[in-house]
Amino acid sequence: MECSLLYVSRATLAAERLDAAADDIVALSRAYNASAGITGGLVLAGGYFAQLLEGPTEAVKTLMERINRDPRHEEVSVLRIAARSKRQFPDWSMAYAGGSTYVAKQIAALLGPGPADPKQIDRLTTLIVSFASM
Ligand SMILES: Cc1cc2nc3c(=O)[nH]c(=O)nc-3n(C[C@H](O)[C@H](O)[C@H](O)COP(=O)(O)O)c2cc1C
Image 1 (tube, helix red, strand yellow):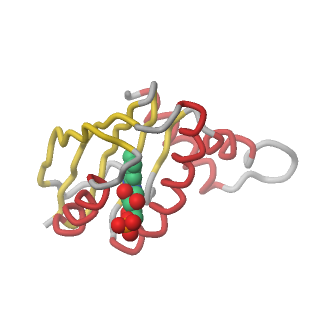
Image 2 (image 1 turned 90 degrees about the vertical axis):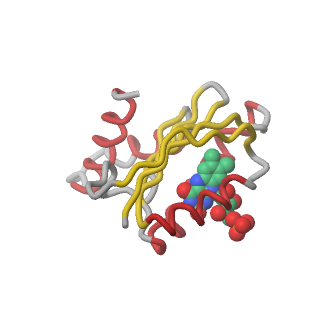
């Protein structure tokens, strides 16, 4: 059974440390989520996180328990868990939108001479779509 889970939380870290912390979270999440068959998107805005996790129900619940214990955020509120067969982020082990160096890196990778990587273009497109739909 597949499900999607949406939660919001408040970051506990000082504003100037948040971007770096989010980069760490996303880097670690990519590897773990890929191995667990989980995809999704994470947004950091104004000191709040919003994250959508999708994948096998048991795997999503197990991950959510770990995320819930993470001291880098508090007031973790699960808003919705829904049975889902179609994924909203099929190509992303964890898409990320925030005022971070991560978005800058996505753009920088597509700047400059030489043909752009189509996968990279897809990633930036998804980022923009996820920004626009927030
Ligand atoms: C807002 C937020 C989102 C997170 N999202 C993920 C995620 O999608 N995948 C993941 O493996 N860890 C994620 N983490 C990190 C986990 O909370 C935890 O640090 C990590 O899974 C390692 O857990 P462990 O220390 O119990 O091994 C997130 C942390 C925060 C604060």
